[in-house]
Length: 384
Length: 160
Image (tube, rainbow over all chains, first blue to last red; front, side, top):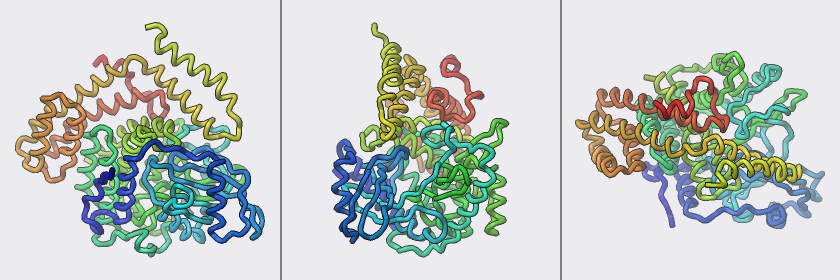
């Protein structure tokens, strides 16, 4: 059975990024499939070795293949790669389950990671099985980078949401966090046109593409209607901002998606580029602000690192770009709208269809959608 | 009925905590994490026990009130006339799921008068304040809420 995504009803090339339509259409087709069965490390090993050998690495041997913890979306394995070509290399395999909390495309992730290699610390991409023809599911293989997402001993929430870094880490990590944000936003937006399309038909197209993407996700996956999400959609359609400058938007840049060394407090790598696209730089700023930690005295810390005002001022000082309050507010509404869609719709539906190896985490994550709904309401009241 | 759900959940939590989780090897981080999540789900279910129907009823009452408000406010709005007609049918047939989707689409429509937008926003805010408070209170045991001290309890909300 083949289903249709709401995104497919938009006029291709105008109202939504065409490659996003294709991605959502593929996701819609996956919904009718049966229960997802993960491969064990033992089942995966021969496929993985065969795949690596087809990439031209002679005598490749995979040792110590084992599953990693963490992550709500991808199956993750770590292994040591032995070959005649050089020293042993520790690698990470990230593989799509049938569905996950967000629909993404390995082709986009592969392209943007390759582009960022010379710009900021990212995992080195070794190979990609874009369609999953060799490994069974779409997958990326990257070099392993050490580090932590939060200081050891900090239990936090398993989802990584609401992270507040201890004060002794904030100043040093904040400076690097801003530097890397500025660096990724400085990259030219000239990717292969079949992978990333540029929303430059009119000044509002960047915002409209995002709204149409995420309202399609919501309508494809919603378990129950949400009058609040309806109002949010209307407010965003009525308040689409002009993009002042288009950049490579990471779209999930926050504490939890970079690794750092606890002793040196150096960021070792920036992770999770799978939602990257070309859009308005306010989008990343808003996402960082909406993933907030709150100090004991009630101070909101954007991504658990710095106040929202500090973030915007540091960004403005480093780039010379205007941080427009109305545009930022639009993207805050969009950010929280996305979080509600991911939690209450896609995560819950995926778990219900038994389409992920992390169904129990997705059904846990779904509950966060109610706190995000309250945040969405608060932002809409502020925007009236 | 004996054995009560509370007892069964309690025993599942104890066996997970005392027997199963210590038996998971350190080189199985995903299994460890998922066992921890099971424990968390069970702890939340234990705190929510026996009140799910009351919470659903509360949310439905809010939805009917919003539907009544929008049916009245939108009477002159041509662009949402079709959705309103479907909402009216769903409301009469007590089809709550359909009502939710129709209400969402009515509110999502941009092509309505400014008066409808203003008044429907007021009605929605009243609905959503009560609905999001209940959602946050109900799922408070999951640990996602950033400001739990300001929240009324589920029992206090149900007593309103």
